[in-house]
Length: 186
Image (cartoon, rainbow, N blue to C red; front, side):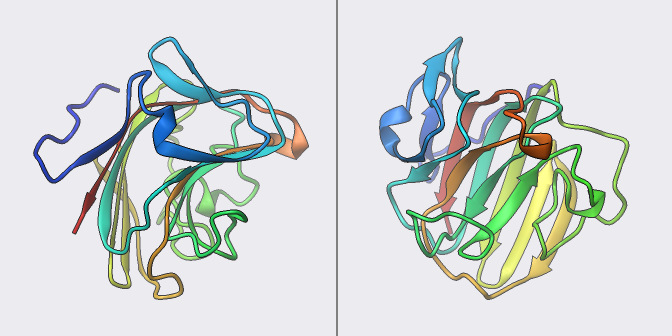
């Protein structure tokens, strides 16, 4: 899917094609690197690109490509940037083959399920996320379609992180690629 990335001076671009790896702190053992017009990881047990800045209210725009067997996500408002997880942040999932599909791709894990798990899968193609966090309101759009929304005040600010994790049943899973990541503080 090809969309136009947001324009304007209020957007901060953290990844633009193969540029931007220096805008992140790397946590974990993922092999983050620049390749073929994107920033990607395809090996490791668990790893994150963690934003160097902290955010409270914001909109994230992200273009990603994930393998079908992937287990990835974007973690927002991380309270501990060295230990990213669902107990220290809110996870917007990228996982088509999740055993419980209600928290699959497009859901906010354990907070906002996708209303009806759809036949649409993100794996094997370029997709966009638009994630909004304003106060306790969280919402997720996948390819411009609203997927999840919730009220959750558990985490109020922190950096956000792009995840690489082991795939289905602990297998490595395929790559995750990011070609555009922008944030607009609100």
